[in-house]
Amino acid sequence: MNIVTPFFQQCALTPEATAFVEEDQSITYAEFKSRIGKIAAFLQAKQVQKQCIAIALDRGINAACAIYGVLSASAIYLPLDIKNPATRLSFIIQDAQPGYVIGQGEAPAWLGKAEIWLDIDTLLCTTVSKITPTVVKSDALAAILYTSGSTGHPKGVALSHQALDNFSTWARQTFAINSQDRIASLAPFHFDLSVFDLFTSLASGSSVYFIPSRLSLSPSRLTAWLAEKQITSWYTVPSLLSFMALKGALDTTPVPSLKRILFAGEVFPTQHLIKLANLLPETELYNLYGPTETNVCCYWQVDRQRLNIEHTIPIGLAACNAKLMIDANTGELQVNSLNNFSGYWQHGNLQVLSPSTYATGDKVSLNQYGEYDYHGRLDCMLKCSGYRVEPAEIEQCINQLELIESCAVIGIKDSASGQRPAAVVVLIAGASLAEAIKPLRQLLAPYMQPCKFIVVDSLPVLSNGKTDYQAIQDLFDQ
Image: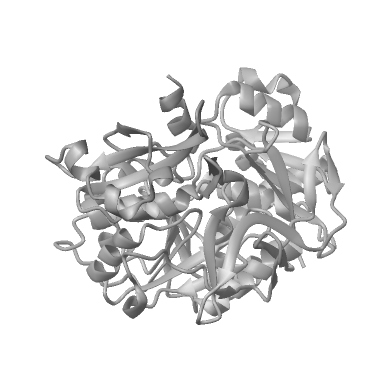
């Protein structure tokens, strides 16, 4: 089944319901169907079935139209982060070799091939909107999401219609998403969290409200926006939720409509989660875990009674009917799921991976409740004077400190011990670094003590909201 089929079924039931809201614009299900029909009809005339079509548009209604239009034409959508450097965008275009690139205005210089550029405004002005029905196999590719690669170059994670639909259906059922829901959307479309915003939402008959990007830097205004729009559901990253807990004025601006918050992408510092849970006592909180290659394979509904500042939260139980295994030698989590990716997209073709089980590179264990606990990346482990050190463990310890607002830990080279941990910290107002880190002497073993600290006003983040560890590495390399 095509991942967009549930939308068309829902559109037949509620054509006049609101599908998307962006700033002062809104669009109904019927209007959205008409717009994607124009894009799909144009692409079908170009015989793009099974081709990769890149989307060079900011998160919003036009980008959603383009994605659904591409999928309705039985092609594969590749969302680009147009805020990326031109060199990265150029690499992705050369590697993916898309048949067309849908953007707005004139073709950018990084494209190199202006003849494959399609202006979204021109597409939406066409009069033909009749789509020729085509059969799409469940294992046919639907999306290519480029992520950072271990080689230093981006790599395209290829996801099938089955993979997207399996997650979307699970999320719809697990979180009881329905036509009364208003879903806040901030995840960029090149980030896998957007699968929920794009597909789970419209398959349920709910409305998607795009959060204005400027509000992510103003947590109190974002809280007011959530309340004003009567948002019921939000799937985002812990970095932003920590910011909201600390500076979002949630104690003075209630958001009674907010039924549930889902978060994923990185570890949520426990002390910030405790604060958020106390500020939103009626809101269900869920920790979702999984790399792009598996989407969500574990989840944990936050049990407020079990939150302990001295412990990280679990990633929970298997999600999406995944089968999970722990490598007996390394502790690495391995995942077998219908969510699993089909392979990597390279040089314009799918490089199929034969194993059905994906090795995540993440170290886990089972806790006393039969849930999975996350212990960090195997490849991020530091060797300090012969000791194995997990940066995530040090982060958890520093984040407990009363005068520390947030932190990030990396490894830097050390001539004596090989590697040593180093930390970037955000202090609470008026605190000194020496005063803030003094308790670490009693909390961390000598070989785990960061050898350097850098104080910043806020942690650098990527376009998807996660902590930018490369930028932190660059701070220490200066």
